Image (tube, rainbow, N blue to C red; front, side, top):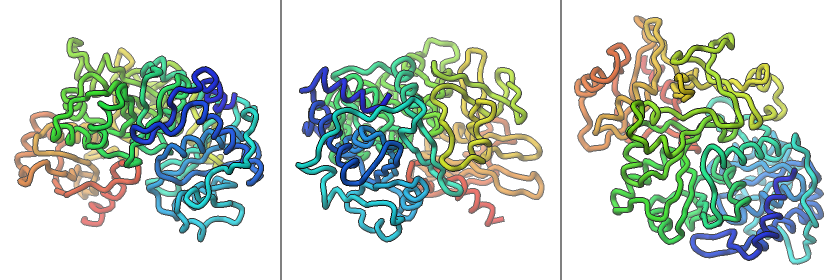
Length: 505
């Protein structure tokens, strides 16, 4: 079934309900949202000769028009290729060319015209709307099969070129239904605020809010502004939000400064990177029991595990700290295992690679059968993440398999060291990597952003680490930085940090 059918059904049920908001201003009801999407679909068909299965890319900042474009693309039976607006035009051009996109929607990004293939038409919304008064709306969404592509998601590409993850209608249906079961309910009065990029996790969470007829809100900043959210949430009420852990940390700092304590918030779903124990404890203390954690990948969008708010706020459970440091049990639509290099399932508590199977797992990588065969084996997606499962089925992430440090023949997992260092009050951010060592093979190095003008001494940090973790795991060097290098998705670039320490040897 075409994903645009959900919008059509909601528009029939609640045509006058507010659908799209810019800040606090309603710019479209559900009837208008659906009509505009149908006209965009008709415009793509008539003016750009877009046929079912063709790819149409979007390289724009968040806006209400972005959501109309997505549903217009699906109305026409095409495949949406959302591109992170923070990427360099050359990076975006690679995605456009690799995907074979027939049309690219931009908003004032004329520089892209210089490096795009001639087979792609650039449509600049600042110069021309997505449809005109003469555009004939499609009568209904183009019929699509469950296995037809709907969303071509490009990985972040911190090493090498990004790969196109093929997400089908069935993949996205499963993700949406699992949200209601495993993450949170959605209410008609909710306001889904898109502070993170619509090209990624935040955009994937539009579907459940369309189904329930909730409001879709793009902040006036078109992105994440912590102080703006502190002011906007109480005025909107019943706000739900997807946020990366780095966003929550920045929001927490702004909330402490302004005295904001979560008014107007209903649910903050976080994922997309490591949320350290100290950070989530502080966030719950400031905002209240409004948090749900999800663990997923583009290859299994938002749907590997979830840690519900009941677990996050529970302090009576004897192992509540362990659970709070985990990413929760498997979501209802997938099976999750921890395995060794041969694929043999490991006992509870042993560290191995996380593999997952189920309805949300991608169809494969676009035009890359070798990468697909490497990642999907016998029906299981090998995530590249290392973790442990406990006896109750709670999964705890350790690290990416490539991030494991082998020192003196012993595996050291950077996340464990990072967790320990973040418990020091003078440490704001930390990233741990391995440095080549003639004596040990590798040794632990910690890059630290201090939370005060006077950073703690190495001796002080050594003593702190020894009080929490085994001595052999402590860093052999502490490098203080004003900021950690991050990609356009807010993830720390450990490859860059490893290169720096390798060059220093």
